[in-house]
Image (cartoon, rainbow, N blue to C red):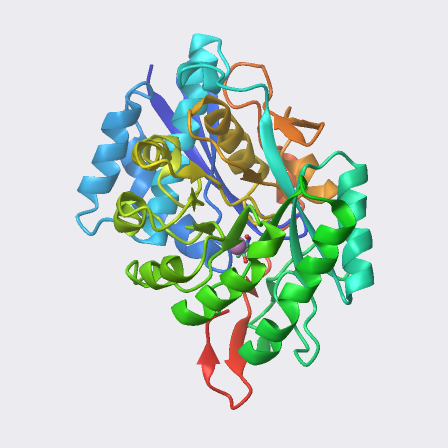
Length: 401
Ligand code: EZ4
Ligand code: CO
């Protein structure tokens, strides 16, 4: 078999997505997600200009060789744009391999290690009462794990709180500017979790995303304050370019830590994993080099009792989610999968066979990944420039968003 064509499809069914579709000489096709929120066209150009020409004529069965070719062959290595482009190719080749073998991809990864993929939903609200009813709505739909974000009095625009059922941080045009105050945040969040734990009892899994906003010592304080409420994880407590910073957090709290949604290779988390500074690694198929490289990260993590907790916000397309579910089902050290349902428009552009039942997602059983892109429908939603927000402290200093 040979690759004869690879199309880069940019579409905006409510938000922007970039998808690579690889076509083989016998007509077999495979899809890979290439969406990098706020920087979509950089990846689209990288694929179109530098990757697609090199794919034509290659044997689609040689997934590892193609991965090494794109990684070592770029010379510059790593970085979100390069690794997202490699991920798209890798994911599409696994899809093709599954179709050729007549097997769902999880079978090629070693087969099922569990009955389904436990997911967590996103509760939020403007005050404690509405947070409680938001959590209750997830529980009533069968969720066993819920991330809780809440408006903080004194902060006007807070990460993770949605006005409606869908949360979308990217806004049209250039970045929105939000204002951040750590003292207000630290004073409020423990009380929110006290109320949620009291209402829902000891077994509902609760999570919280700090979204990179605290210093290591502040994160240690928050983790300690949250210990009575037994969180499953505190996410992105501090920016993680400095992996050492997590030692400070660990010295102060037993609240489990999750990090990695912005990482793109194993090199971003070797110290975090090997020193057991985290409990969950949140790297994803689309941003960490595809199924091939993510498997490598999860296998390293397994040696150190670190479990997977892949990012799964709506800016990761149904193609990425499908691929994630196959890997989640197969690995021994699966922890949790983030899940935010996509809009009806997005679901229509990306027909897929995964389904939600009893708090879990289940991948499609058809050969390959069980997801595709409807290119005709995709063409009806042209790209619209959008950007993620930035954050400033109350004195105007630019902070982490
Ligand atoms: O802000 O995916 O845990 N989920 C998150 C996300 C990220 C977005 C950025 O594109 O932190 O909501
Ligand atoms: Co996050």
